[in-house]
Length: 132
Image: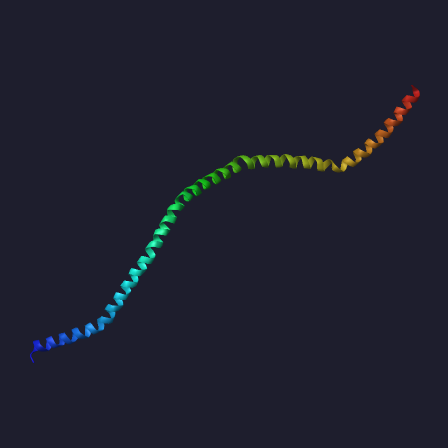
């Protein structure tokens, strides 16, 4: 046998061996292709559904942005208008409370003094009526 014939024989043997080893890979690749094709048909409708749902959510997103802006405006209004006024009201009530608190113990004495004055005024009124 010549070198060419040997090379040709080796080439044919390798070709047969490669074909036999590649055949299972080829069938697996074909099966994988079919599975991917099936998955594609399953996933595409779901993707369409998701796309339509997302398009329905788009107006809600803009509404959410508007709500955020309104909330921000409300917070600013509270911070700049309401809270300072509440601080002023609190200060007034606190000052008034402190004044009343300072005189609370004296009020009892005032009531006692007024009761004594009532008695004295009544006695004086009776005395003045007797005189006239």
